[in-house]
Amino acid sequence: MTGHVVGYGALVTTRRTGAEEHPGAEPFLPADRSLEALAAAVPSCRGCDLWRDATQAVFGEGPVSAGLVLIGEQPGDVEDREGEPFVGPAGRLLDRALADAGLAREEVYVTNAVKHFRFTQRGKRRIHEGPARWQVAACQPWLLAELDAVRPRGLVVLGATAGKALYGSGFRVTLARGRVMDGPEHFEGWAVATTHPSAVLRSRDRDTDYAGLVADLGVAAAELGR
Image (cartoon, rainbow, N blue to C red):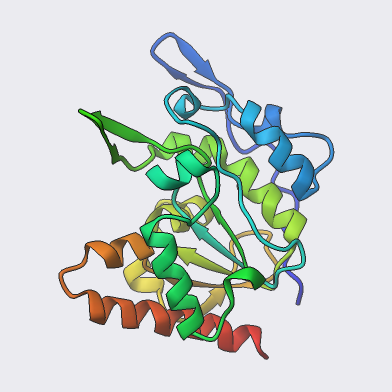
């Protein structure tokens, strides 16, 4: 079954932070919902406040015909500077894990739930800070538009932020990972959850956690091959 996201409508209401209003991303999406048009429009998004400090918006990347979409949290420091998703240390680990699971990076579409890098500045270093729930909700229209443009057969949900963006605040990676589950509401395909590759990099038992990531990706590869 081909995946398709339909009927979401305007999910994000106007939010107020201090004296500023943030309308969510919906008003900034183009009428043309092709990947090319979406990627061209995302730099102008002011749906939340993250654009102010980030270098640039980072849109998804991969073939429009991809059968599998991988969804992470947000761009990291390297991604923010280079303007491409999953090109930093976590991205390199993900590439290796995909290959070990029998999947090719160039055949999947990779993106993030949030398109701008949220961080705390400490001297010259920019320290990753997870996006707030309202920022994830504000950015959701971009993600849903990507899924609607690609229409994959399945999704791989990388970590809690991506899972909550699609399934709500009750989503738990530890409970959902490594099995084929129904896709999120209005998505006609399937999904597999796993840990984010950045969590593997931070792990004290990296070998074990890397093996778990590969195993979970293998579940998606097997389902894709059916």
